[in-house]
Amino acid sequence: MKKHKVTQNIGFALLFLCMAVTLFFLGAIIYFITIRGIKVISWEFLTQVPRNGMTEGGVAPAILGTFYLTMGAILVSLPLGLACAIYLCEYSPKSALVNLIRMSINNLAGVPSVVFGLFGFAVFVKYMKFGVSILSGSLTLGILALPVIISASQEALTAVPQSLREASLALGASKWQTIKKIVLPTALPGILTGVILSIGRVAGETAPILFTAATFYTRHYPDSVFSEVMALPYHIYALMTEGTHPDKQAAIAYGCGLILLVLVLLISTIAIVIRQKQRVIHG
Amino acid sequence: MDRRIVKIEARDINFFYGSRQALSSVSIEIYKNQVTAIIGPSGCGKSTFIRLLNRMNELVPNTSLKGAILLEEEDIFDPSVDPVEIRRRIGMVFQKPNPFPKSIFENVSYGLKINGITDGNFIEKKVGESLKKAALWDEVKDRIHENALKLSGGQQQRLCIARCLAVEPEVLLFDEPCASLDPISTSKIEELILELKKYYTIVIVTHNMQQAARVSDYTAFFLLGELIEFGKTQDIFTAPKDKRTEDYITGRFG
Ligand SMILES: Nc1ncnc2c1ncn2[C@@H]1O[C@H](COP(=O)(O)OP(=O)(O)OP(=O)(O)O)[C@@H](O)[C@H]1O
Ligand SMILES: [Mg+2]
Image 1 (cartoon, rainbow over the protein chains, first blue to last red):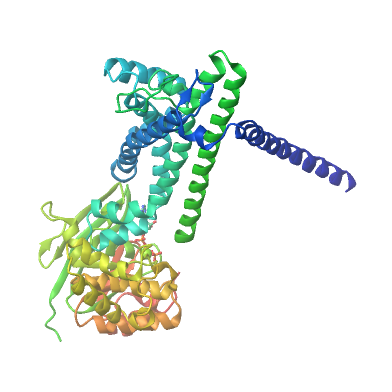
Image 2 (cartoon, rainbow over the protein chains, first blue to last red; image 1 turned 90 degrees about the vertical axis):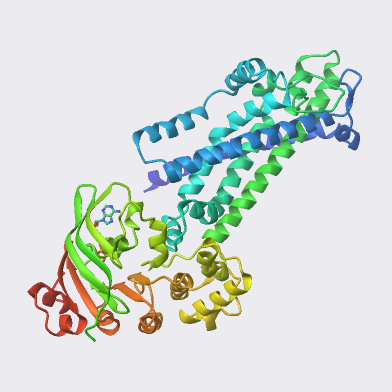
């Protein structure tokens, strides 16, 4: 009896310890980045171009570049991924081949992002001659985001009860009408969650844009999809590895890190709110 | 009384889920403007049978069918026939209420809209009429734009009936419409069926013998995928010809 209790207490203590360590690291990341980054954040930092070999001015082109690249990636991956998920869930026969396709898509999610970068470089930058540009970067990031979007959409579509499809078809709706008016609207919150989560992932990626879109420094804002751009993650990388004023540069890097962190946290919060709403509607 | 018009005729239906036979040589006539009840123990193929009548079973993968089903003499399984057209003419209310996660109004207007009707006044009128016919109007007229999932189970089932009536099918199929309902909702739906009989041909699956006796004109008794006996409800319940029918309706049966 007593021995039982002791073992149990040790077990609880260990579990608690693990949780505390995890929380500590999470908190430390947020604390550390905030403390170091907040110093350089100002209106100027958010709205100006970099000056003086990147040691003064702001990071506005990098913020804008990350925004363009992320939106471009979603523009590529959402229609493609959603169409793919609809086909797999609603139209394709349930065969071994389709299962294989599903598995490959899931495996695609495990491919290291730098490999996507190499692929994007070979295909979009060189072969298709888009050059180092927003277009190449968006396409590369879009492909990177595809597996997440497809599996989130598939999950959301499968979660739509078969009885709703039957109800619609029994009223004389065609299959396409049923998908458009009943299945998709019901699955929408789940699909959006996937989109938003992948925005979070895409916004922070460095490796895929390293050779496809990003440039270390530009005074100009991009003027077309064929422009190369600055981007926050790559800017951090460049500040920490190049240049002649390591201290000043590091401070700016932490500022960029804070902006990225806030962006991603903001996006995750939106995802959680939408999920919550979905629960309210569908029980 | 004997001038019966055949609305649907099933001819020698054999139906398989994979290699498992669910219906064996079922032949039956469904008469126009009459209520036909389908009774039989669980798993005997009642749902399978009525889901064939509006080609709903095609959605189940890996099934096969032999035989023909004629809707006013036209084979509904003929390759030239569009299942969408058949389902417009033959409405169905399912065992479990399945309203769309939309407003009450949108639920009822859905069938009209997918049929290309855009006239707002007409849709509004039709929604009101259908809800009245389904005996739901008085309970929901003040909250017609609220989410249908907020309704009680019995109200949801009547909403599903209203939704079905709005598109004016010729035949109504009910698969145990009262299975999840309380006695009050059940009697409302039974009254409704007797009322609807004037305009529609009705087929109802039920486990409730009293219900079959109360609402139906004809009764079909299924057992293990076979149609054992079919006839006037009165005859089936007072003088069944088959011993198995008698055992079932008197409750001497699993
Ligand atoms: N989708 C399916 N796949 C495989 N077998 C099925 C499927 N649906 C039904 N069956 C089988 O077909 C037989 C008839 O089922 P059906 O649902 O028609 O019975 P039922 O008379 O409606 O029963 P209940 O009164 O319980 O609703 C059962 O043995 C069932 O297991
Ligand atoms: Mg059934």
